[in-house]
Image (tube, rainbow, N blue to C red; front, side, top):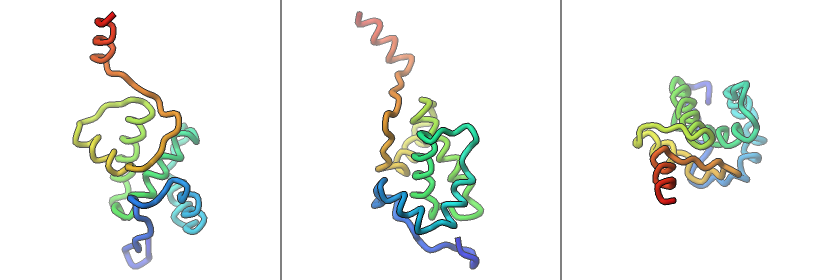
Length: 123
């Protein structure tokens, strides 16, 4: 974020590969340091690294004073992926589009109550 109120476009979230995140962090230490302040105290590396990538990929679209909105969207995405939280379909579609291309290793698989009942009835 520049001192003149805007920031140059430094990331294209559609073309950035996960492997490029570490290179980007090294080249943009000031932004990386800022993003690191967004990590919650209870967030494991397994949860933080993909959420951090989500933030990096989308930060240009949510400059000050809208960074809080981006952080909320990143938590919606992470809560859906890691905890199975459900949200309004339009919101989930938005965060999934924002996260397109982010690879989460060993992501848990969640079943809805309806899926569990259907599976039990087939037995």
